[in-house]
Amino acid sequence: MSKILIIGAGGVGNVVVKKCAQHPDVFTDIHLASRTKSKCDQIAEEVKGLYGVKVSTYAVDADNVPELVQLINSIKPALVLNVALPYQDLTIMDACLEAGVNYMDTANYEPKDTAHFEYSWQWAYQDRFKEKGLMAVLGCGFDPGVTNIFCAYAQKHLYDSIETIDILDCNAGDHGHPFATNFNPEINIREVTQVVRHWKNGQWVETPAILDDKCIHFPFDYPEAGVKESYLLYHEEMESLVKHIKGLKQIRFWMTFSQNYITHLKVLENVGMTRIDEVEYNGVKIIPLQFLKALLPDPGTLGTNYTGKAVIGCIFDGEKDGKRFKKYIYNVCDHAECYREVQAQAVSYTTGVPAMIGAMMMLKGIWTGAGVYNVEQLDPDVFMDELNKCGLPWQVVDFNGELPA
Image 1 (cartoon, rainbow, N blue to C red):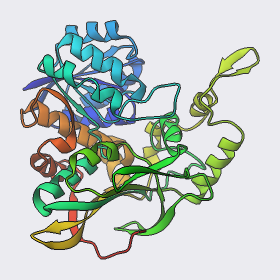
Image 2 (image 1 turned 90 degrees about the vertical axis):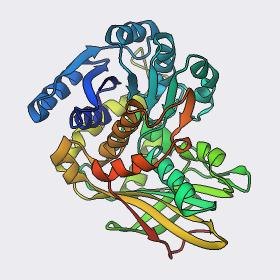
Image 3 (image 1 turned 30 degrees about the vertical axis):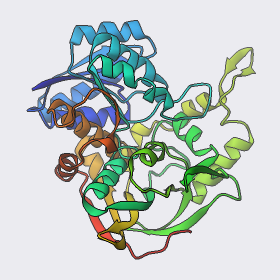
Image 4 (image 1 turned 135 degrees about the vertical axis):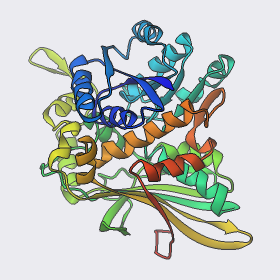
């Protein structure tokens, strides 16, 4: 049916390619590119053995627009799916515009020299994509991605207006390492060491970062995972949801962290290993966080012995036909089951599967339009059905528990 170019061969790229290969009626021609072609070749070899599907592989520098354009023009895909680093979102978008191809990613742009991420850089592409008749879909992973879809579904089917949303992300898994991050260490550590923001009554409210003793956290009883300490954190999907969910007065994002993780990260920050500015060592300039990344386990290798569950969902408080009530929509994902299926841990799986489904929505013409879109602007129904079919089943239950005020 369609040809797709996937850029990025890390843990998420591995999942995306394998899930695409499970749907040969949609993804009839799969192409995979990365800076390191050997990573692509390894995934392609596994896909051939598992599914008998051929994946074409390429080396490409995703920071180089002319090189990207040349690759895209040689392949002529219907869609470019970007699962590379967030630093590379804009160059890949530029290349898609020049080559005249639709675009999708899983995380918003972040400049390399500043630990700061927001959608403004990508939203600025709205007119350029619209004028070319091209579609760009942003943040189609799990959070952002499925959490936005849950919000769109709740707005469409459960509520007339939604007053508060709490997004809760729990990884209750055990990978056996003293300290490791579940996705790119550089991106992960930059994200969790930032000052926290949440939306309340029409403005962003700042609170201390999770490593600060004054940070906001509370114990939450997660389905199948149990009680885990959950920390208030800034996350990108809130920025778009405040624009698109009617009547929203408050939105917060919570993520679980073990005390072991917090302690390790505090020590690393205290000794300067989380710095993103250059330092000189033995006459060579290095960035401490990039050096730390080289020392930590590759997230793509964590799945082998990973056990436990990841639980991600949204709690809504709103009104329907004059009645006020709370609902909880969530997914439970098992690390070991993910590894058995696609040789990946649940964090990569929960990002890669929605990326594949979003690509399916675009290639089937279910999601169409010209311009730049966040996923909650698009119809959630078929996407929600595909989550159930593709390994991320969801539940909707009444919520009667307590959340911080």
